[in-house]
Image (tube, rainbow, N blue to C red; front, side, top):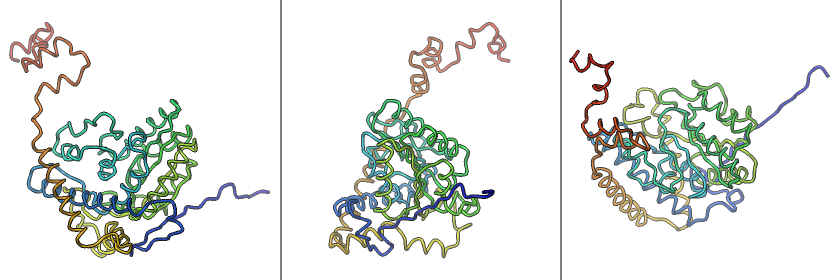
Length: 371
């Protein structure tokens, strides 16, 4: 036979809870209970309040640039809730705040990071998350390495690594995906396709009809989900983690969502986005559909909404107080946390705030002469 088909594939799209809050009961079976949905919705309320306050902190000069998570809460929460707290590892980029908080990261750490305080990146012992990653795509390599360690140790643990659609055009993604698939490590590659790589639309930065299909080249099970649907995100992430835990290797999930805010507070998306596109996606806001679902079940009303919002305000207010009230770091930290055992000459520099050791080096006589 001179010509034959050697490879065929398809990518499924999964939606369980639609924009109007209508649930496909058959697909939802065995996923989230109503109590869990209510809990996750409350986390959305907190995260949305956190975003609003962080935005105001930046605008008032109390914090540096900040990337809002607005509109992407279901993708972070559904996937994060599927992972096992204290066992699995989350390797984020910078729009997964809700998932990180769910896994125990103190909320003030994110504010400290964007305030330029490195203590925001000092993850507490027992919290299985890495610091947020600003360089695009580099964290996927770290996630693959962590997952490989789990496999070598024969530990029933998994890793979820998060990234945006633009990151799949980076070389780091392809290296990580190839490595993960070749070694069959327990890692879930979770792409938050929010339609924009900063100011570049998805259809411009990649020619792939879907982001999910990129995983096919690496032999990964892959799926596209409604990223604003808690149920679909949770189900597909749970299934991918179960497969990884049982030795099935890595998986890829493309969560189709939308960045309702600017890329960061340093951006003005009005310069490149069609307002009609934004308005259409606002109707798909994960908070709207999740609340509609809860209301249809008699589990939510205006009174409970007000209570949740007041609680969120109190929580975030306390987080801001903690972040802004943290004791100022000292210059000693620059030295003390660089070496396990501080060399004598470095200790001298720390204590005197002078490069005394350079002056003592005969070949540096010109420095002593003031030249």
